[in-house]
Length: 387
Ligand SMILES: Cc1ncc(COP(=O)(O)O)c(C=O)c1O
Image (cartoon, rainbow, N blue to C red):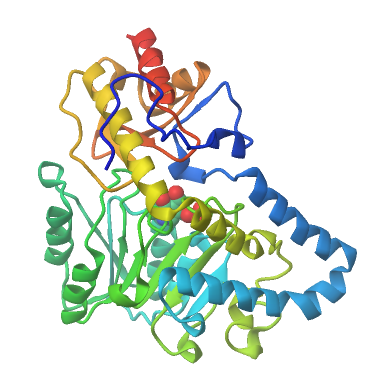
């Protein structure tokens, strides 16, 4: 890993091109929240647009003749990237949709339990609550230990809440509000030993770290490409280990009796261009180098977390291999509340996630190739003004 710069913009290698120019991002804003909605390089928007143009030239012909073979190629490319089989992976618009397929495909009886954690993404929590209500099942929400917020502490807390009634556990590969990487391979093994099906929510993992779905061994792995792979928005996947005949789509559609994959991928008339442009997103980072990108992002976000922690007169977070880090927000800043603080920073040209978790406020910082050390310095300056 590169050593951290003190205050200058010289983090990049001499031959590192000006990555910010690859994106359409407003230059007056420090974009420090890649984690929520990603950001799409111009080149990949162009790739998406060319698929849209192909569709518009002959909508009927494109959808009936060209779409399925094109989706098949994407499925193969994505499966190789994530090390799974194209016959065990379906393409979908986002994780929210993928999770509804996981839940539709899980048999629940009254009294069964679905295990999630307090860090589970709110949309996933809502889908679980609805499924539980429908089947008179129960949702067990694992409180996470604020004193032992380590991957091991979180895994132990999850395992302690397994009961003979637990049918399914939905676990984040990287927790969303607190950016903690869990050992999902070990956790899956331990949950399987207790007879629990496992779904891994890889929203922040696909692209940000190497993901090997076969080695993880979960029953379901959901991931998206519109965050850390920078694909156009609305591109995600669901990998599954069971026979596709026993899988049910979250949203049944026109091709329901055609089986896998049409049954799942045809959820009405959708804009498939983001999914179709996803191989271009993977190639974009193949060319730059995934490892180089990840090291750059990890180093940069650690620098950001360090200077913000220094400003808050706190110890910097431990080293991590992720492009996201959280810094807890002390008084008087936390007294503003998450929304006011986010808005006050946005007014000064800093977009950053202010996260409310476990009765604490955190700044969740991201880094991607368009970021510079000056973006984090701008955040510190903006915080100073709020003091
Ligand atoms: C852990 C987690 N799961 C699911 C989602 C929702 O993803 P999508 O927008 O692809 O539905 C997010 C979004 O930030 C997330 O952080």
